[in-house]
Image 1 (cartoon, rainbow, N blue to C red):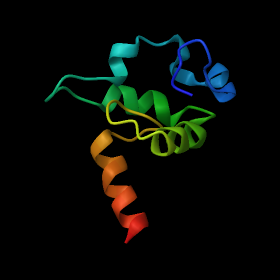
Image 2: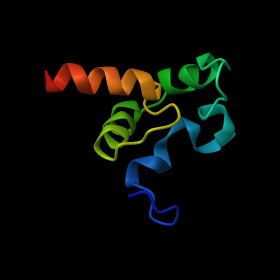
Image 3: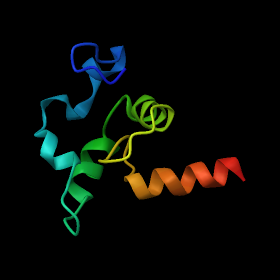
Length: 79
């Protein structure tokens, strides 16, 4: 669910829930490493990544992967 009022259940356990959201949506050319570091320690990282892929999230860091990494992985899965 993409509705801000109906967050997925796993979101309550996400390491990013207390972080500044802009960290996970860096501007073109900005580093993604700080966001990815938060994801590395997250107990629901795999749920987050599955959510992003299932919902076609086109922007931001989800489950420790950038939009480019998610697209690349989807292509590998579809091949």
